[in-house]
Image (cartoon, rainbow, N blue to C red; front, side):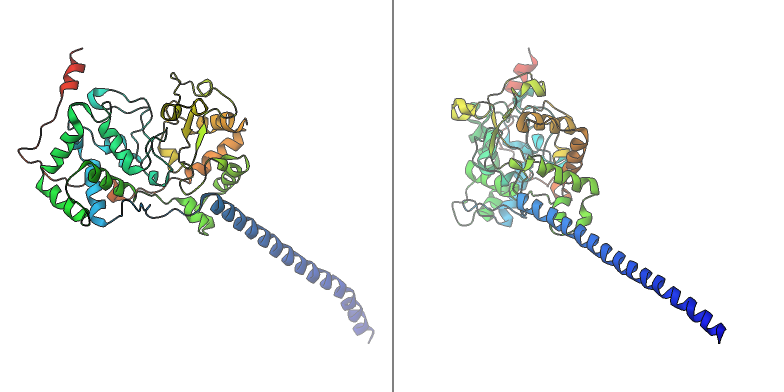
Length: 381
């Protein structure tokens, strides 16, 4: 009996300890559940903040004045790669906006007709249809108007000297295969080969050039689409104020801002040799001096060098300059590293079909020939 009482006493002593452990386990479980719930809420909050700032990237960017159809898009793709639109028959849209290198040529400024260099960096055509306007100074309303610009520029594709626009149209119109394709692409209006229809077709093609990236997967609920440092960078990007200008589906391209808005002049920070007055050259307003369209940050890690004059090659340096000139902040190295990591999450995949040169129709024997006059003049100097 005493033996049983002894064991019973020990059992009574163990009960509080067991109960304590059970309570502790329950508390730990609730604490873990609370932490997990808090982490999930933070993830959801970051996704919602990003979605609120950037929105959804569309597959295509419509234009009521230039309805899209597959025939027009395919025609525009061919014309985008066709050098016959240039006076010398050597330059295409793709020459400066190379689809294999994310819609740019990775040069500070591009080489055009007669080996002459343009004054500004060629921005990417990828996602460009989402912008409020085209060119750094916003002088073209949309991608259709932009497509006409280089064809009319003597430095870029050789026009309008010697009626180049007429020459380009005559070349394309002399090719039977193209004539047939224009009829299919523009069935509801005059389907003739014209400068307007050429630029509408190129614009239609460019309206399909959107590039979904890991950031889009993240905003759609895939938490694993971004690394931890990219998520931190996204948070830092929003906290320091970058989304004030870099917002919308293109993560930029939606407004104009003075380069050197808080601290300037901009060339003090970029080391630029020239002092481009920017949008003032279009509006002739003093208030628009050094004002440029805010660039899109999609694919920014691949579209170096940076800024309107291609003066900066390092993305890290570009981020620091933006912090100083636009925000008045000296970003720490950690902040800079985080933002740069986030910017890499904006790199989308360029589909193989975008990077493959289409088969172009052959010229007719009577097609107007190339004009190398400027090349010969430059070579003789």
